[in-house]
Image (cartoon, rainbow, N blue to C red; front, side, top):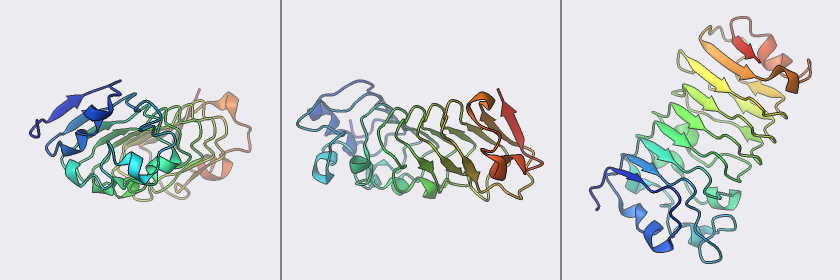
Length: 213
């Protein structure tokens, strides 16, 4: 199966199956939603380096062709994501890390040259989103209840949509002050933020399109 190009394996938690995924060198679309192996043998929630290696390649050098990667609800914690380097996913265009348990994004996401869609919905421990790639077109960080800061790429693409609905702790969107880009759309929920929040990074940007529900 090493020439397999698409694998949708949502919900599969068999350790033997997951340990073979790193050998798929030609896979382009990979979905592992809800695939956190059952404890105690390989739980990603309390995983260390050796445990994480049982199913995710630490450098992703085997997955250079992956374009779509879905890892939502996999129990990924900070201990787990600190063991991997996403920068090896040179072809990655869409990444879904929703419903995981990390407080910061895994290393290397900011270096992905083709990443256009990043989804981190309902990552309730996520505090900040820095170092996003300039290729990004969509950031969906809705329902991240601990999220305080988002840094927008300084040299972003022409069109950029940022969705931060129900991220009630959000205080600042960094990196857009002084930039004149009428194609940016930042979606926030007005009722969840005080008038002083986001004033520095959003309200002073005259050409920014801000959608307030």
